[in-house]
Length: 353
Image 1 (cartoon, rainbow, N blue to C red):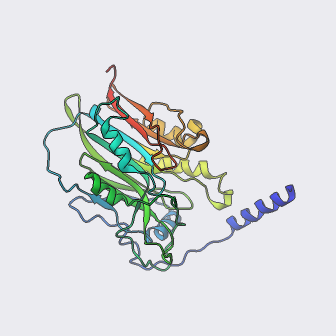
Image 2: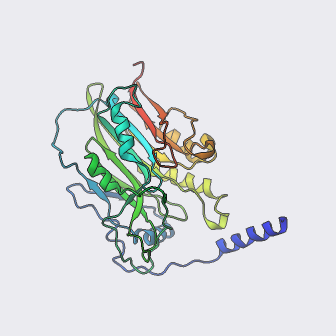
Image 3: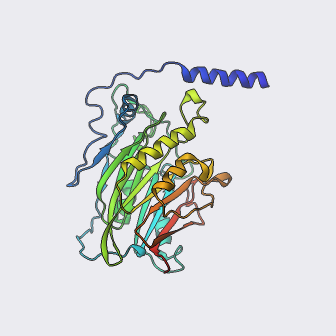
């Protein structure tokens, strides 16, 4: 048995160390996925400087559709500001569109997570959102796609459809194609999204370094009232690597890969108040380097040891960088709402209140 295990590991290692070459992409293959949006707002992109990273990201980028910035149908420009303490912040991995966001929002609005007090304003930072419309049916030669995943017992919900039904703002950037182009299933891609009752401005897409699949973090600003003054909070959603490169047998290099991604996130994010919802995939808990890096960048983050995934793992976290004399509180929802991750719910308030 030991000899067979050693032989299998050696085979995987050799396979991971062997040369792998992507086909050359057509010149216009990435024009769609890194577009600047079709709205009055300009989308900024931050990408790694390393040429090898760029080539890998280009191949994945060529298989997805453009970013989305959606505005509610009933939206009217408002002049009144919402107090920051009245906004509920949620981070949730919806398991490739399987999480029932509408049911969760209904419970949130009804006060299930606020001692019966109705909630009018919220910001959701979502990982593994899925989008169907706008995804190219045919992709360029050399483009890459991920294996199609998603729960079979529940329908996969389109994030654009969810935003439309809830009549909220949406910012979505796909990370990867969800299934090959030759699949009999409808074309779809998956990535990170922000859903908000407050207007989203200054959208930013951050392509993260690291081996394997493409990961794109998203960020946008919301305006709130802090101590009687207008303040812009940067809201981000990120999903870090589960596995590392093949040459490290996938598992052994995962923590290093996530550490590089956390460093890239902190370098790309501006100063000032910020909240980041992330599936960090930190199997080693708060001692993992990626978590320590993000905690330093978000120094008002409350420490949570409540599991958000099977086996007692704390994979999902919300990080806070708040104004002076403000603090955050985070709790876990009691239900997974169809996902394999629990939503985590955060509120902020002036210290002492």
